[in-house]
Image (cartoon, rainbow, N blue to C red; front, side, top):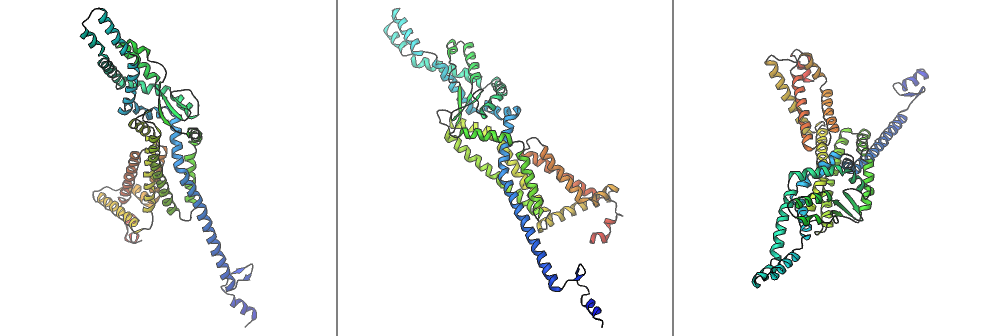
Length: 450
């Protein structure tokens, strides 16, 4: 045999590089290096996805708080909606009623009245028993004055007119809330040292006028001093104001950054579906952490407010009212995260996921066959839906997610509504796809076997 022919025969079927036949050892080394490069590439992607995931989880609760602060600061309607329930809260009403009653009664010098009455009776020769009885009227008279004033103040504070006045005052004073958050000293909500106070001067003026109209001329002397109610006290108020200013600045863009980081984490990760599940569950866990933190902060807040400044029940009502939208947002985020993780799981190869998909497909097929037997077919529309089932499913789910993103302050109820609509649309499209004409190729036995 020709040596050249022998050489060609020995290299037959072997890879060549630049005309050079690669030996088995060289090919094995090439495959080993290729596998090593693939492993390094996957490790790099895992590392990058992990970093992005950690950033997403750390920033998710901060983005929620930043959005809440930004809404309270920049949206007057939202702020008024937040504080409006305080006007009708019984605990808060009782604090205002008691304080205004005490201030009004303090302007009535009951001792001087009884002393004058006693002197007048004595000067006019009244019997000693009557004079002594007049001197003992101080207690009953003070009680009667307090009862009448308390009843008058209660009617004012518990009336619908007060709720409307409260809402109007807060709407006008919204700019002062911004001043408090930025450390300015003007407005209804003020920061004084380590204490945040609410100015109730407008309420004092209204009650004072009502008492004067009711015949208590002394009420006109209710002083303009001490017209504030302490909301809370903290030694960290200065730092909190700095943090709130920062949160207000980043409140618009931080949620967008979190969404971008989450999307990048899913895109970089080798297993996209698994990373969607991990990211969703992680964000849901951070929502739970935020809810727990609010419980802890509530306890700290209540401990920081002296009972003399604000009774515990009223302080709790103030805190719960101010953070209720933040709590609702955290619960909504938790529900969305769990639904996202569940959706990603149902798209996976798990036994339960396959069973759910198979059951849904069987139900849709049965409904489609029932429609065909009833003489209703979907024609080309059904054929198109059947051929593009994955595409239509993705568009429907994406439309639901977009609706939640565009929804102004979605709640858990809004999430449930969007989920219901998505499931209804998916069910309808599946039934319409199954109701395509029977002669369609997808109804043939060989297609079903495939």
